[in-house]
Length: 154
Figure 1: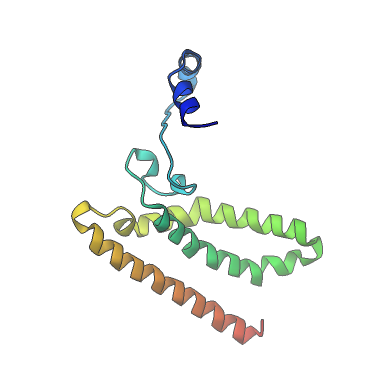
Figure 2: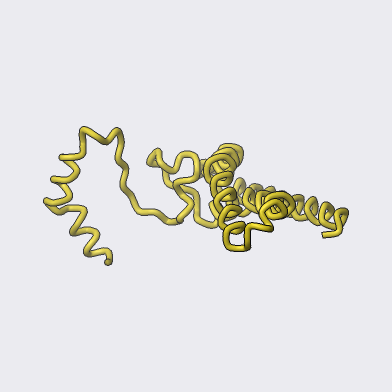
C-alpha cells in the first residue's frame, strides 16, 4: 500500500515468524528495493551489487529484443498466421520473453558488463563509449533488417 506499510511489515512479528518457519526450506533469500523491472535479468543484480541504471538496462533489453521480434515477424508469425492474432501474438510474446530473459539478457549483460557496471574511476568514459557502442549496434540491427525486408519485399 505504501512505504510506511512496507516498513511495518518488514519489521513485524508475523513476518519474522514466517521467515523462521520457512528457513529450513529456503536456500537463499535476498530483499532489497528495485529501481527497474529488468534488474533481476542482469548478471550480478542478485549478488548484492548495485544494479546498473535503469536506462542502461532498458537499452540492453531493446538491443536483444529487436532482433528476436524481427525474426519472429519473418518466421513464427508466418507459421502461426492461421491461429488467429490473439493466440499467435501470445505465443510470439512467450517466445520473445523466454529467449530474451533466459538466454540473451544474461549473455549480453556479461558481454557488456564493462559498460553496465564500470569501476567508479572509469564510469564517465565507459558510459560514453558503451552508449556509442549500443547506438552503433542499434543502427547495425536496423540496417540489417531494413536490407532484409527490402530484399524480400516486406
